[in-house]
Length: 162
Image (cartoon, rainbow, N blue to C red; front, side, top):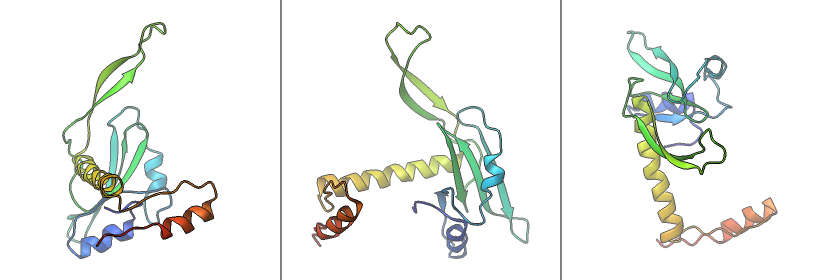
């Protein structure tokens, strides 16, 4: 998975017959950010997308926006926007009575199939990164306020155990 996905990445991987789903950052060439950012989405789970067809009218690539807490913009060369498994989360919520204690509430949001695939994979990547940094201690960070000092010290403290 690549952070800051791009249309060029999706196209190149499609040519290599590799599947790709990625979250697009705001500065992405050839992505329909202007159009998708103007689409009205009102509730968690709302989504709208565009499909690019090849010369034989087969789906080649899709761009879509999905509303979680904020808008998320995706590019994919596989999967679909059919409804996938709903996302279930437990969150703290304050009731209408401001004097009452906040309570835990189960939230269920509809999710497109492409988002299910993406977030299932991202969770594995996050788990791997935490394991690499915390358990294996391959990467250590030294807190610095000066950016130049952070960069210089982070390269010097890499302890690779190959």
